[in-house]
Figure 1 (cartoon, rainbow, N blue to C red):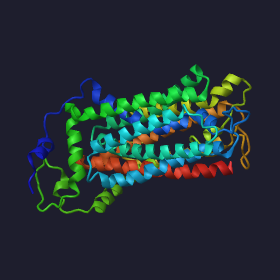
Figure 2 (figure 1 turned 60 degrees about the horizontal axis):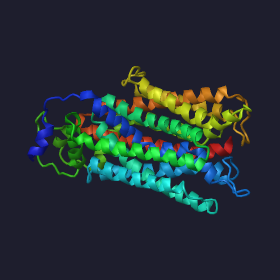
Figure 3 (figure 1 turned 45 degrees about the horizontal axis):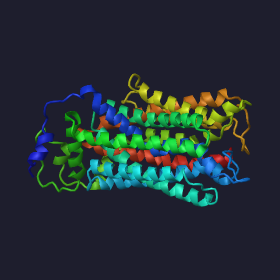
Figure 4 (figure 1 turned 180 degrees about the vertical axis):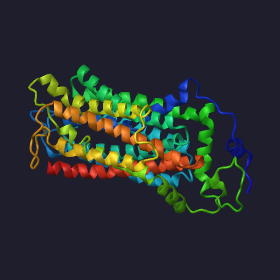
Length: 443
C-alpha cells in the first residue's frame, strides 16, 4: 500500500504553525458553547415551561407547579435529551467511517438551528387549550435537537482531541459557559420582560445567535493554518478502519495504525477502551451524579425567605446561575491545578465517586414535596453552598478526565478516543437521568 499525495501532505511532519491571536482557541470555545445550547437553554427556561404547562384558571396561567406535567417536566426533559445523545454517540462511532467530522457537524448544527426557530415560533402561540399537545411537541423537538447535538459534540470533540490539551480545556470551558450564558440570559429576560412567553421569545432568539456563530466559526477551522491539518487528519483517520492494509509500512512519518495490518472495527475500540477506561469511568461517574440531581432535584429546592423578589429569582440564581459559575470555574481551574496527575487515574475515579456524599445532603434541603427524607437543612445558605461544591467538582473532574485520556494514546488514535470519551459521557448522562426519576420518589 502507498499513500497518495494528499495523505502525505499532512501525515509527514511540516512546519508547526502557531495559533495566531488564539483564533482557533476562541472557535473551539464557542463550539463548546454551541454543543450544549439545546440542553442549557431548555432546562434554564423553567418558568416559561411551567407557565405553558400550567392549568388555565379564569383565562390565566401561573408559573407555579400545579400538575404532574410540571412536577416531572425536568425528568421528561432529561430523558428526551440524554437517551437520544447516548444512541447517536454509538451511531457516531460507525458514521465516522463514512462521513467526515466536518460534514456531520454542519448537518447537525443546521438542523438544530431550524428546530430552535420552530421553538421560537411556539412562544408566540397561545397553547392554553392544548397543553398536552404542546408538551408532546416540545419533547419531540428536544429529541431532534439532542440527536443533532450528539452528532455535533462527537464530531467536534473528535477533532479537538487531536489538538493540544489546552484546546480540550477550551472546549470544556465553552460547555460550562453555555450554561452560564443561558442562566444570565434567562435572568435578564425575566427582569426586563415580565411575561414568561415574551421573555422566552427573547431568550430563544439569543440561542439562535450563538448557534449561528458556532456553525460559521467551526467551518473556518479547515481554512486556518494551525487547525487545517488536524481537520484533514481526522477525515482520513475516520476512513482508515475500512481499508484493508496489505503490507505494513515502517516510515516514522506514518501513523502506527496504518501499519497494523487488518484490524476489525470492534478490536480497535476494545484496545482503546482498555487503555482509557479509568478516565472514561471517571467522566461517566461525574455526569451520572450530576444528572441524577441537576436540574430535576435541585430546581425543586425553594427559598425559605418571604421576600417576593428573592422568591422570583431564587431558582434561576441559586440553582442554575451558581451551578454554572462553579462548573465553569472548575473547568478553568484545570489549567492551573491538575490533581491527581494523569499517572493516577484510579484516584481521579475515587474523586468522582466522592461526589455521592452530596446527594443525601441535597435531599435534606427545602424541597416541599417529600416523603422519606427529613428536612434538616432549612436555610437558603445550605443549598447555595452545596450547589457551588456540586458545580465546582463537576467541572474539575470531568475536564481532567477528558484532558488525560488522549495523552495515553498515539496521535492517530486521539480522534477515536475523543469519540469514545463522548460515549462514556453520554452513558453517565443516561443513567443519571434514570436515577433522577427514582430520587424524586424517594426524597
